[in-house]
Image (cartoon, rainbow, N blue to C red; front, side, top):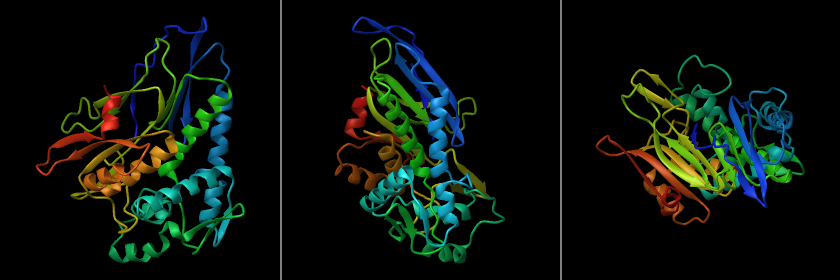
Length: 332
Protein backbone atom coordinates (compact mmCIF):
# COMPACT_ATOMS: atom_id res chain seq x y z
CA UNK A 1 0.00 0.00 0.00
CA UNK A 2 1.29 3.43 -0.88
CA UNK A 3 1.97 6.14 1.65
CA UNK A 4 1.90 9.82 0.83
CA UNK A 5 5.20 11.40 1.80
CA UNK A 6 5.06 14.88 3.25
CA UNK A 7 7.56 17.63 4.00
CA UNK A 8 10.47 16.08 2.12
CA UNK A 9 11.17 18.83 -0.39
CA UNK A 10 12.96 21.31 1.84
CA UNK A 11 16.25 22.61 0.47
CA UNK A 12 17.43 24.37 3.62
CA UNK A 13 21.04 23.60 4.55
CA UNK A 14 21.73 21.01 7.22
CA UNK A 15 24.85 21.96 9.15
CA UNK A 16 27.16 19.15 10.16
CA UNK A 17 30.58 20.29 11.34
CA UNK A 18 30.08 23.48 9.31
CA UNK A 19 29.51 21.44 6.12
CA UNK A 20 26.41 22.14 4.06
CA UNK A 21 24.71 18.96 2.96
CA UNK A 22 22.80 19.03 -0.30
CA UNK A 23 19.63 17.16 -1.09
CA UNK A 24 19.71 14.47 -3.77
CA UNK A 25 16.72 12.52 -5.01
CA UNK A 26 16.60 9.43 -7.21
CA UNK A 27 13.28 8.17 -8.56
CA UNK A 28 12.30 5.28 -10.78
CA UNK A 29 10.16 2.22 -11.31
CA UNK A 30 10.79 -1.23 -9.86
CA UNK A 31 8.86 -4.31 -8.73
CA UNK A 32 5.68 -3.10 -10.42
CA UNK A 33 5.66 0.19 -8.52
CA UNK A 34 7.73 3.34 -8.01
CA UNK A 35 10.63 4.09 -5.71
CA UNK A 36 12.27 7.18 -4.29
CA UNK A 37 15.62 7.58 -2.57
CA UNK A 38 16.19 10.96 -0.92
CA UNK A 39 19.49 11.60 0.80
CA UNK A 40 21.62 14.48 2.06
CA UNK A 41 25.35 14.61 1.40
CA UNK A 42 28.16 16.93 0.32
CA UNK A 43 28.22 15.39 -3.16
CA UNK A 44 26.17 13.02 -5.27
CA UNK A 45 27.80 9.84 -4.03
CA UNK A 46 24.96 7.52 -5.08
CA UNK A 47 23.71 7.34 -8.65
CA UNK A 48 20.58 6.05 -10.37
CA UNK A 49 22.68 3.38 -12.09
CA UNK A 50 23.88 2.03 -8.74
CA UNK A 51 20.33 1.86 -7.41
CA UNK A 52 19.12 0.17 -10.60
CA UNK A 53 21.89 -2.44 -10.31
CA UNK A 54 20.87 -3.30 -6.74
CA UNK A 55 17.22 -3.58 -7.77
CA UNK A 56 18.05 -5.81 -10.74
CA UNK A 57 19.96 -8.21 -8.50
CA UNK A 58 16.97 -8.50 -6.16
CA UNK A 59 14.59 -9.07 -9.09
CA UNK A 60 16.81 -11.90 -10.32
CA UNK A 61 16.23 -13.58 -7.00
CA UNK A 62 12.75 -12.66 -5.73
CA UNK A 63 10.51 -11.59 -8.63
CA UNK A 64 7.69 -13.99 -9.49
CA UNK A 65 7.23 -11.99 -12.72
CA UNK A 66 10.73 -12.79 -14.02
CA UNK A 67 10.87 -16.33 -15.45
CA UNK A 68 14.65 -16.46 -14.90
CA UNK A 69 14.50 -15.53 -11.20
CA UNK A 70 15.44 -18.01 -8.49
CA UNK A 71 11.94 -17.89 -7.03
CA UNK A 72 10.43 -18.72 -10.43
CA UNK A 73 12.85 -21.64 -10.79
CA UNK A 74 11.79 -22.86 -7.34
CA UNK A 75 8.09 -22.62 -8.18
CA UNK A 76 8.56 -24.59 -11.42
CA UNK A 77 10.65 -27.28 -9.75
CA UNK A 78 9.49 -30.55 -8.22
CA UNK A 79 11.84 -30.55 -5.24
CA UNK A 80 13.50 -27.14 -4.93
CA UNK A 81 16.14 -24.80 -6.34
CA UNK A 82 19.30 -22.86 -5.35
CA UNK A 83 18.84 -19.96 -2.93
CA UNK A 84 21.12 -16.93 -3.05
CA UNK A 85 21.62 -14.53 -0.14
CA UNK A 86 18.47 -12.54 -0.98
CA UNK A 87 16.18 -15.56 -1.14
CA UNK A 88 17.74 -17.11 1.97
CA UNK A 89 17.30 -13.96 4.05
CA UNK A 90 13.71 -13.44 2.97
CA UNK A 91 12.68 -17.07 3.49
CA UNK A 92 14.38 -17.27 6.90
CA UNK A 93 12.55 -14.14 8.05
CA UNK A 94 9.25 -15.35 6.60
CA UNK A 95 9.52 -18.68 8.41
CA UNK A 96 10.28 -16.97 11.72
CA UNK A 97 7.29 -14.65 11.37
CA UNK A 98 5.05 -17.56 10.34
CA UNK A 99 5.88 -19.50 13.50
CA UNK A 100 5.62 -16.46 15.74
CA UNK A 101 2.19 -15.47 14.37
CA UNK A 102 0.68 -18.98 14.39
CA UNK A 103 0.92 -19.09 10.57
CA UNK A 104 -1.05 -15.87 10.00
CA UNK A 105 1.76 -14.98 7.57
CA UNK A 106 2.70 -17.64 5.03
CA UNK A 107 4.65 -17.20 1.78
CA UNK A 108 3.42 -20.58 0.45
CA UNK A 109 0.01 -18.99 -0.12
CA UNK A 110 0.90 -18.40 -3.82
CA UNK A 111 -1.38 -21.16 -5.23
CA UNK A 112 -4.33 -19.56 -3.44
CA UNK A 113 -3.34 -16.05 -4.53
CA UNK A 114 -3.27 -17.30 -8.11
CA UNK A 115 -6.60 -19.10 -7.75
CA UNK A 116 -8.29 -15.90 -6.57
CA UNK A 117 -6.98 -13.88 -9.52
CA UNK A 118 -4.09 -11.99 -7.95
CA UNK A 119 -1.25 -14.02 -9.43
CA UNK A 120 0.76 -13.84 -12.62
CA UNK A 121 -1.95 -15.32 -14.88
CA UNK A 122 -5.65 -14.46 -15.38
CA UNK A 123 -8.38 -16.79 -14.12
CA UNK A 124 -11.55 -17.89 -15.90
CA UNK A 125 -13.72 -18.11 -12.77
CA UNK A 126 -13.58 -17.85 -9.00
CA UNK A 127 -12.55 -21.05 -7.21
CA UNK A 128 -15.27 -23.11 -5.54
CA UNK A 129 -14.91 -24.92 -2.23
CA UNK A 130 -13.63 -28.09 -3.93
CA UNK A 131 -10.88 -26.15 -5.70
CA UNK A 132 -9.83 -24.50 -2.44
CA UNK A 133 -9.71 -27.83 -0.61
CA UNK A 134 -7.56 -29.26 -3.38
CA UNK A 135 -5.03 -26.42 -3.00
CA UNK A 136 -4.75 -26.36 0.80
CA UNK A 137 -2.35 -29.38 0.93
CA UNK A 138 0.05 -27.26 -1.14
CA UNK A 139 0.07 -24.48 1.46
CA UNK A 140 2.06 -24.37 4.68
CA UNK A 141 5.39 -22.82 5.62
CA UNK A 142 6.36 -26.08 7.32
CA UNK A 143 6.72 -27.53 3.81
CA UNK A 144 9.78 -25.32 3.13
CA UNK A 145 13.36 -26.18 4.13
CA UNK A 146 16.65 -24.30 3.68
CA UNK A 147 19.56 -26.72 3.37
CA UNK A 148 23.13 -26.03 2.21
CA UNK A 149 22.25 -23.17 -0.11
CA UNK A 150 19.12 -24.89 -1.43
CA UNK A 151 15.47 -24.11 -0.81
CA UNK A 152 13.63 -27.44 -0.74
CA UNK A 153 9.91 -28.26 -0.71
CA UNK A 154 7.92 -31.27 0.43
CA UNK A 155 5.62 -31.43 -2.60
CA UNK A 156 5.86 -30.30 -6.25
CA UNK A 157 2.72 -28.12 -5.88
CA UNK A 158 4.32 -25.92 -3.18
CA UNK A 159 4.96 -22.46 -4.60
CA UNK A 160 5.95 -19.26 -2.86
CA UNK A 161 5.14 -15.58 -3.29
CA UNK A 162 7.25 -13.18 -1.22
CA UNK A 163 5.44 -10.00 -2.31
CA UNK A 164 4.28 -9.56 1.29
CA UNK A 165 7.86 -9.11 2.49
CA UNK A 166 10.09 -8.48 -0.56
CA UNK A 167 9.47 -4.75 -0.90
CA UNK A 168 10.38 -4.19 2.72
CA UNK A 169 13.51 -6.27 2.23
CA UNK A 170 14.41 -4.25 -0.86
CA UNK A 171 14.08 -1.01 1.11
CA UNK A 172 16.47 -2.41 3.72
CA UNK A 173 19.01 -3.41 1.06
CA UNK A 174 18.93 0.10 -0.41
CA UNK A 175 19.21 1.67 3.05
CA UNK A 176 22.18 -0.54 3.89
CA UNK A 177 23.79 0.51 0.61
CA UNK A 178 23.43 4.18 1.59
CA UNK A 179 24.92 3.41 5.00
CA UNK A 180 27.97 1.87 3.33
CA UNK A 181 28.42 5.04 1.31
CA UNK A 182 28.66 7.03 4.54
CA UNK A 183 25.25 8.69 4.13
CA UNK A 184 23.62 9.42 7.49
CA UNK A 185 20.43 11.29 6.53
CA UNK A 186 18.05 9.62 4.10
CA UNK A 187 14.61 8.30 3.28
CA UNK A 188 14.12 5.21 1.11
CA UNK A 189 10.66 4.40 -0.22
CA UNK A 190 9.46 1.63 -2.53
CA UNK A 191 5.79 0.93 -3.11
CA UNK A 192 4.96 2.91 0.01
CA UNK A 193 7.30 0.92 2.26
CA UNK A 194 9.66 3.34 3.99
CA UNK A 195 12.87 3.40 6.00
CA UNK A 196 14.46 6.55 7.36
CA UNK A 197 17.64 7.61 9.06
CA UNK A 198 18.55 11.07 10.32
CA UNK A 199 16.73 14.33 9.70
CA UNK A 200 15.70 16.76 6.99
CA UNK A 201 17.94 19.70 6.08
CA UNK A 202 16.12 21.99 8.51
CA UNK A 203 16.94 19.63 11.38
CA UNK A 204 13.42 18.26 11.74
CA UNK A 205 12.51 14.55 11.63
CA UNK A 206 11.06 13.07 8.45
CA UNK A 207 7.29 13.48 8.25
CA UNK A 208 5.22 10.61 6.85
CA UNK A 209 1.54 10.79 6.06
CA UNK A 210 -0.54 7.63 6.38
CA UNK A 211 -3.48 7.45 4.03
CA UNK A 212 -6.77 5.68 4.47
CA UNK A 213 -10.08 5.27 2.67
CA UNK A 214 -12.62 8.08 2.42
CA UNK A 215 -15.99 6.61 1.59
CA UNK A 216 -18.14 8.40 -0.98
CA UNK A 217 -15.54 11.11 -1.60
CA UNK A 218 -14.37 10.89 -5.24
CA UNK A 219 -12.35 14.11 -4.92
CA UNK A 220 -10.05 12.60 -2.29
CA UNK A 221 -10.43 8.81 -2.17
CA UNK A 222 -7.32 8.26 -0.01
CA UNK A 223 -7.00 11.16 2.44
CA UNK A 224 -4.23 11.47 4.99
CA UNK A 225 -5.42 9.92 8.26
CA UNK A 226 -2.36 10.46 10.41
CA UNK A 227 1.09 12.07 10.26
CA UNK A 228 4.06 10.65 12.14
CA UNK A 229 7.63 11.91 12.47
CA UNK A 230 10.65 9.64 12.45
CA UNK A 231 14.41 9.85 12.46
CA UNK A 232 15.04 6.10 12.46
CA UNK A 233 13.27 2.86 11.66
CA UNK A 234 10.81 1.67 9.05
CA UNK A 235 7.10 2.06 8.39
CA UNK A 236 5.07 -0.23 6.13
CA UNK A 237 1.38 -0.80 5.57
CA UNK A 238 -1.06 -3.48 4.47
CA UNK A 239 -4.71 -2.98 3.62
CA UNK A 240 -7.68 -4.27 1.68
CA UNK A 241 -9.15 -1.09 0.18
CA UNK A 242 -6.83 -0.70 -2.82
CA UNK A 243 -6.12 -4.19 -4.17
CA UNK A 244 -9.49 -5.90 -4.59
CA UNK A 245 -12.20 -6.53 -7.13
CA UNK A 246 -15.94 -6.97 -7.04
CA UNK A 247 -17.60 -10.23 -8.02
CA UNK A 248 -21.31 -9.50 -7.90
CA UNK A 249 -21.92 -8.32 -4.35
CA UNK A 250 -18.68 -9.86 -3.09
CA UNK A 251 -15.53 -7.84 -2.45
CA UNK A 252 -12.53 -10.06 -3.15
CA UNK A 253 -9.40 -8.88 -1.32
CA UNK A 254 -5.86 -9.79 -2.39
CA UNK A 255 -5.08 -10.78 1.21
CA UNK A 256 -5.72 -14.53 1.54
CA UNK A 257 -6.08 -16.50 4.76
CA UNK A 258 -3.57 -19.37 4.37
CA UNK A 259 -5.52 -21.56 6.79
CA UNK A 260 -8.96 -21.33 5.16
CA UNK A 261 -7.93 -20.55 1.58
CA UNK A 262 -10.37 -17.64 1.35
CA UNK A 263 -9.78 -13.86 1.22
CA UNK A 264 -9.49 -12.22 4.63
CA UNK A 265 -12.71 -10.96 6.08
CA UNK A 266 -12.56 -9.08 9.36
CA UNK A 267 -13.04 -5.54 10.64
CA UNK A 268 -9.56 -4.33 9.70
CA UNK A 269 -9.17 -1.99 6.73
CA UNK A 270 -5.45 -1.31 7.05
CA UNK A 271 -2.53 -1.84 9.40
CA UNK A 272 0.59 0.34 9.50
CA UNK A 273 3.59 -1.05 11.35
CA UNK A 274 6.77 0.54 12.69
CA UNK A 275 9.83 -1.64 13.24
CA UNK A 276 13.57 -1.13 13.22
CA UNK A 277 13.83 -2.52 9.69
CA UNK A 278 11.41 -2.60 6.77
CA UNK A 279 11.44 -6.35 6.19
CA UNK A 280 10.21 -6.95 9.74
CA UNK A 281 7.50 -4.29 9.45
CA UNK A 282 6.42 -5.58 6.03
CA UNK A 283 5.98 -9.15 7.23
CA UNK A 284 4.08 -8.24 10.37
CA UNK A 285 1.67 -5.80 8.70
CA UNK A 286 0.24 -8.72 6.70
CA UNK A 287 0.11 -11.00 9.74
CA UNK A 288 -1.69 -8.38 11.85
CA UNK A 289 -4.26 -7.84 9.09
CA UNK A 290 -5.08 -11.54 9.27
CA UNK A 291 -5.43 -11.59 13.06
CA UNK A 292 -8.19 -9.02 13.43
CA UNK A 293 -8.08 -6.07 15.81
CA UNK A 294 -8.36 -7.71 19.24
CA UNK A 295 -5.91 -10.53 18.53
CA UNK A 296 -3.49 -8.11 16.86
CA UNK A 297 -3.40 -5.84 19.91
CA UNK A 298 -2.90 -8.82 22.20
CA UNK A 299 0.00 -9.98 20.03
CA UNK A 300 1.63 -6.52 19.96
CA UNK A 301 1.41 -6.22 23.74
CA UNK A 302 3.74 -9.21 23.96
CA UNK A 303 6.31 -7.90 21.47
CA UNK A 304 9.25 -5.53 21.62
CA UNK A 305 10.27 -3.33 18.70
CA UNK A 306 6.85 -3.36 17.01
CA UNK A 307 4.24 -0.58 17.00
CA UNK A 308 1.10 -0.34 14.89
CA UNK A 309 -1.73 1.89 13.73
CA UNK A 310 -5.09 0.39 12.69
CA UNK A 311 -7.95 1.65 10.57
CA UNK A 312 -11.02 -0.53 11.03
CA UNK A 313 -14.77 -0.72 10.60
CA UNK A 314 -16.84 -0.60 13.77
CA UNK A 315 -19.87 -2.79 14.38
CA UNK A 316 -22.13 0.12 13.39
CA UNK A 317 -20.38 0.36 10.01
CA UNK A 318 -18.42 3.55 10.70
CA UNK A 319 -14.68 3.77 10.05
CA UNK A 320 -12.44 4.37 13.10
CA UNK A 321 -8.77 4.18 13.99
CA UNK A 322 -6.60 3.25 16.95
CA UNK A 323 -2.91 2.66 17.66
CA UNK A 324 -0.45 1.30 20.17
CA UNK A 325 0.94 3.78 22.69
CA UNK A 326 4.34 3.79 21.01
CA UNK A 327 2.88 4.58 17.62
CA UNK A 328 0.78 7.40 19.04
CA UNK A 329 3.94 9.01 20.42
CA UNK A 330 5.35 9.19 16.87
CA UNK A 331 2.54 11.55 15.94
CA UNK A 332 3.12 13.97 18.77
